[in-house]
Length: 249
Image (tube, rainbow, N blue to C red; front, side):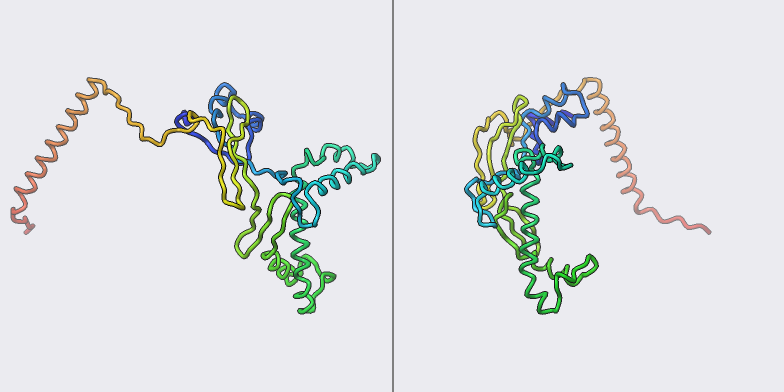
């Protein structure tokens, strides 16, 4: 339907130009022009500064070094070695979320210990069907906050948030060009490298199209006949409104 630039700009979450190409269900001749100037919102799962101090007390750099050392130290005879060989930090984007998930649960469990003890409950008694212990841990999870590997993690009574920067990209000539960043901690939006041509105008565009002469005459005649018919019906209604009602004998 031609809903593409310069009349429209599409915004997609967590997609890249290559992912669009790999999952294309139409001809590239149609897709490539449609992707031009598309805006992408990308949440980096590996966007921490190397000197940031994490919940463990170690810097992000130290965490990465230890992670990659653990992977490299696996025995070559290990049946998972071939699988893990492709999952160094550079390629494994799920390492950081898993790290944060474990820490969130660990902090919630640690915080719940006094309440468990007061209610004569113990983690040693925990089973999947032990709802009492599960509910206590979940309640304490709602107050967890810490410096995670992905971002600043914060839970409350209603939300579970990871305040991480959002990279703003734009597809230009088949490349992902970074044009800005949003920092959730400071609620700060920074934009750069933006082409005025890539932003559609907010002005209302009015287009005039000339009607075919024969079609215009036909529309005029139909409208005139309809007007005459309505006028006649209105006159008859007014003229007959005082006529006595005819009753059957």
